[in-house]
Length: 241
Image (cartoon, rainbow, N blue to C red; front, side):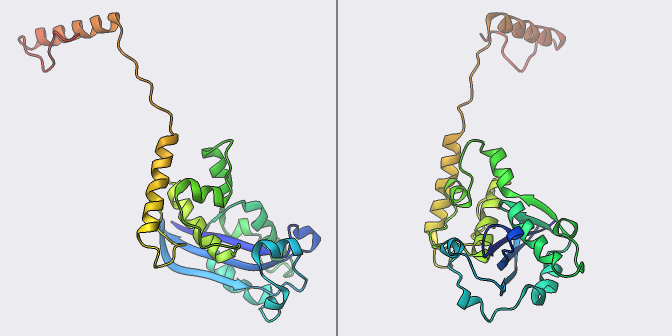
């Protein structure tokens, strides 16, 4: 099972208004384990970054000036993701931008959902935690995934954080520390343990129901029948109650 956890950064919010992708970050998982392979590129969008978008990711027009255009990295990107399962938080946003970029290339490439299957981790989180905040930051806090080193959004960093969150969220396994610095050590483990304790505390207490008199009587009669059929022997005492 090959999964690619993906995130993008963009010049704005609407590809229909001509906004473009400026960063793509992908992390590869094989059978729910990181392979160490990733895809990452900054991209020259041929338009300016909106002020609001810059406040989120901090990627400036000057920084992007000498970066390759999407058509220069598209073949490498498509080969990296083709046939895998994309895991994306709020998938319609990223898929919408990627499809818009692919559509600009004279029909040379299929839409993303024809290249890959897509799993939206935001939809999954809302199903698991209805009525709660399910942003990536909120999920990090809920599951004890350390994201303190993130000051601004970045596609590769967010993909690594999402990979950690997704693995914990979909199987109860502890974070694989994809987003952690090598020197975080026991502090990161403590954060994960605290997240597991928090989840356990949020679960409702199990209801305890005692057997009634009629049920106890039927139970005693069953034990007596078992004993009678086995020469008076029964593994369970017949005088309980």
